[in-house]
Image: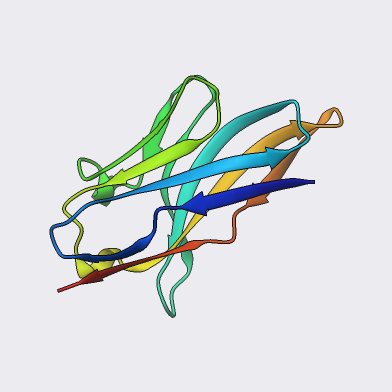
Length: 119
């Protein structure tokens, strides 16, 4: 089994910063692409950013410049640095990863971490 464990969420005032972390644990060969998604109350889950094992990144356009996704080469974990936060960033943030095991690639989700931005 593979688990994605997120950390770093919490309550922050508008204009502040948070750094989320996500690490995969379990038995696997390799963690491929990883990403962050978020879901606000009553809304669908949306892409925040993704990063491949070779470091190629992709962001939701409106978040470019404020959010930065990173990882150490192809290693675990993946980070999301969030700056200049505003109340509209309030959501549950989910980690996602493609993991190679048993000769196949499986997609996994973390349990989510709450980010609340107060005005």
